[in-house]
Length: 87
Image (cartoon, rainbow, N blue to C red; front, side, top):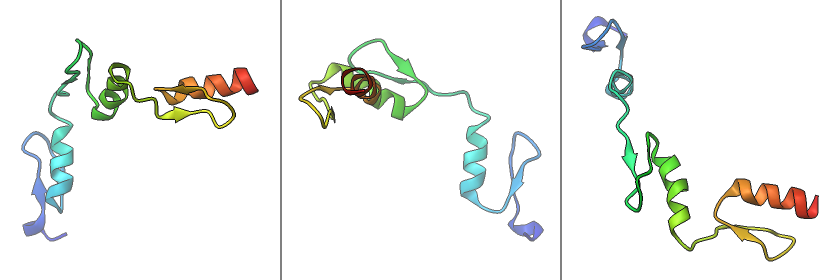
């Protein structure tokens, strides 16, 4: 990269050649912003983890056993079921 295209982090010596990389880097300097469940007091730092958690409040049971009528809200419960019931 030429010097005129180099972007610098205002917090440290990090340098890169594009805005996306700089934005991603700067996020590392910021404290994690917790995401909160709208149904209970649960909070975490990951939107993906919150989505998994929020299934406990709904009726959706997306993980279904192919060998019987068992269904569940969490993939790990299905894995355990298959191992114990059909293992």
